[in-house]
Image (cartoon, rainbow over all chains, first blue to last red; front, side, top):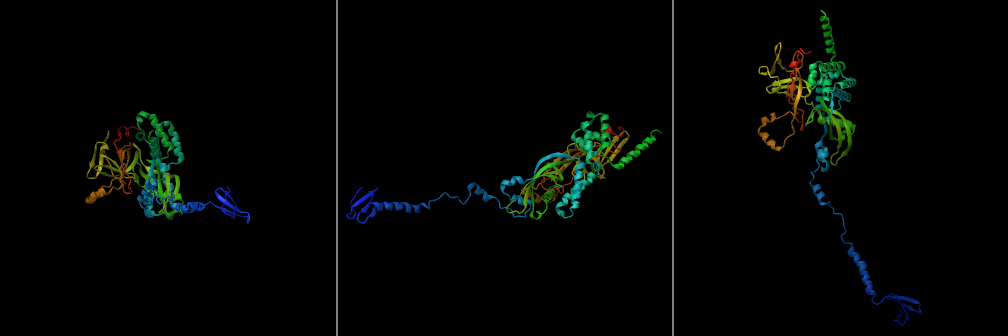
Length: 251
Length: 238
């Protein structure tokens, strides 16, 4: 667009609203914005500069300093942890509520296996040996219960026939008992008591009159007395009496 | 007589025991907690059998001790129904004969289960059983210390956990009665068995150990219902 505005600038070329004035004499070029350029400039200036000032304080989506309300309530209501050194309940009670259920003692299986007196005897004697070997470094106050129960149980079991038994004897006994068709509980009782008379067998075996004939009871008795070792003194006495009887018999 | 019970528990090991092997510390803690104590509906705990599984140990804020969840097996005294046991007569009273096993005392033979011609001798404080055979009447004196064979008939567990404040008010007024309220957590009621030896050995078990039981122990009462009639199996049989 050719505009002649100034005498000194005869040729004026404008590009997109702006005016370029060209002076042929001085070869000086000058770009002249249109008359309302200042307003435009001011507008853009306001737009960019001043608006940036407005944008900054806009509230950004920031994380609130407190957790969501549900948890917040819990956090405040949970009891304060008990001071350490309080003992087991204190330590356990101080743990977070979510773990509370796991801290209680649970019985998974109240009847996992039956133990014969012999097994308990072995366990207790091994434990006693271990405790003796480790010396008296343990505090006796906490161990008193264990000591009491171990002593008493060992005393009781030592009076039963199981102290003469061994794992091989027990295995042999159980193999031999397979033919007699007895329940687990009955076999256990025979193992623990070592009956020597038919009366005792009738006590231990349920409905023995119906299930076992006299010969069966007799054979059962024989198996028990042969495999399971009894009190050596009693056996000597019995054999002595037997020889005496034999001596009296023929006469 | 003894059963194996599988249990799980969380064991707390204080920091001054960290130098010991974990297994040993845990075994000791478990024995300290359970040995010689009655667990409700389970029985009298004897000692630890073995540790089946150890889970990870945790240390929680505020407590320097480590907490480990342990799966273990414990040897527990818990006779099954109709089991035959041998014990010693501890004492006799109007409510029956009390038998002891040494480690377990709360076994009682109620008078109904003694053979019928039984009477309580007040002078000697013993039960006497007049046992009749072809040869005549025998007086069976159930003396203290005699060995007796008995059959377990019933068991009773009582929860002896401490009760709340409401009962405390009542107990302050009856201070004298409070002492008597101690109940055995585990009681066995048993019946007599007669063997065919010369003297009828009556087995009476009374379990009366109450002392070491802590909260949560229950009385296991075995009731003896039947008196085993051994008349047919007297000397003549064999």
